[in-house]
Image (cartoon, rainbow, N blue to C red):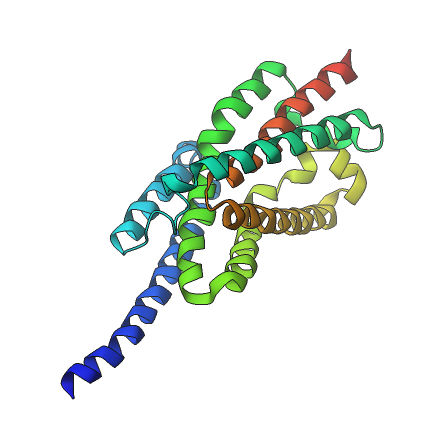
Length: 247
């Protein structure tokens, strides 16, 4: 009788541990976001990468397998194929967007006004400070913990929603640094709020696509490549637009 009771209690303990894992990941991500955006300049550089590595190590100790984290070597080949396809599509879309007069103003982001700055951002800052840490945290650790508790629907809905909310702080000054967006939504507090809302909706939608790639390929390589191509190619395109506009 005791053995039977223990056997029946084991799944409940496992489920409780899985819920705790999700709660820990969400709390750490929320704290990381606040520290990165509302403390010091150094914190904004190192906090997200450090938090991603800590979460990865913690959840490995909690029992998540490499394939649950999207890091299994057996999925590298499939992930690479999806990554190449995603990068090709995005680069083509960015090139078209930068060339069309109706969408060209949206590339006029002040922080990418120089070619050298855009190159450093796209090849170093964006991959190491943003893309890889965020994908490890969201499509790796958060994906794996949510999948154990809520399954595929929870991963797509909760994971993508949290990814959208993750960008609230970073989008507070979006309209003041992007002339095309400011002209579209207007200025002042109302324009800022609309800009934040649009950023959350856009990044949540991007999270759905990243998650689909993660599940379809079984690897983080595909969402990392897509995430980089959106941000990195966008930065380079912005610098080119600035350069050609000014000259």
